[in-house]
Length: 402
Picture 1 (cartoon, helix red, strand yellow):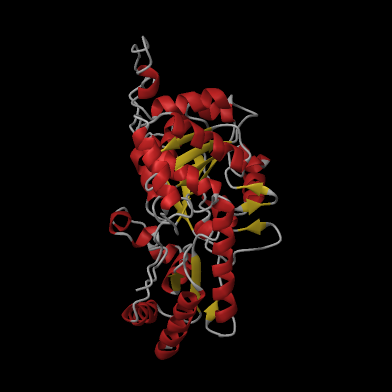
Picture 2 (picture 1 turned 45 degrees about the horizontal axis):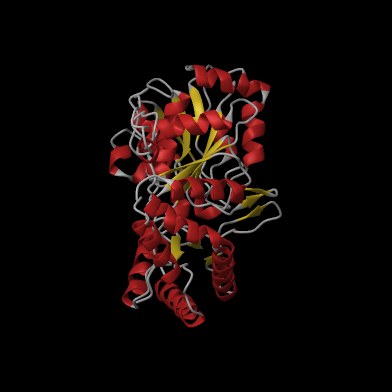
């Protein structure tokens, strides 16, 4: 069986977690702080808050922005449900827009058509690790035509002075756009360190701030840490110092902090992350070299003049393939003990959002991408022999079906 995306757990990872266990401190503490500092250094930022998921990061950002009922947040129709779910939790309305036909990212023209006076934020997603067109998006929201529409509904939004760009960077740590790393591309970004991600902490995430022209990052970091711990002014590590028990609750916050056990994994992962990216690029190039000779293979975009992917998902599309044919191809591949996946079922095709009257017919590119997409295995310890097995199995399955 060739698995789809198992984590890289080895003696170095185990030793780091063991060290944390033996330290006597396993929840949020010194390793979490160190991990935050190392992430900031890696992306080129100055303030990071580590959390238990990228979803929590998006929730905290929208909470900080004061997004509420009556507001609108633009999201791509082609993404995982978390991108829209966090908007629903605020009481605001997710406004879904279509994606590009050339890649899987949000279409900027579609964004422009969706902006109204109720729009408070846009959450683009770097699908598969390829950055969206950030300069085009910022040029749009800063234009006089769009800025005249902006109507802030909270003090934070007023201070921001325009629509906020919140990057769902769940896939894209290490990605580069015009010589800047993911994390430094939007106003605020939220990374994922879930078990299947390039860089894992088992479960985890982090918010990166990039609004120093409008806000003090140190203050934001403190505020987000407080929000992630029930609104408590001290974390457990600080409270446990001699004589430092007293704390206060300054808001009805959330509970989504990262633990030192998670950070212990993340520190190892981050230390060798360039090695990880190099191997993932090798895998992408291997698949592309094997598949590009076939007329039915739409090879994913993962490098352009301005963009370098994090090589998170190899999103192969089968040209002129129906959804039913794609499903049969996956079945045939699976019968050969090769695990593949689909990323993603577009949001309007999910039962919850169907019930809210979102209709996939309104997002033709999202559906066209979905119906033909197969994600191939990408993980560090894949051998050339296994890669060849994957490629040959996919080729044989496609040619049996089409």
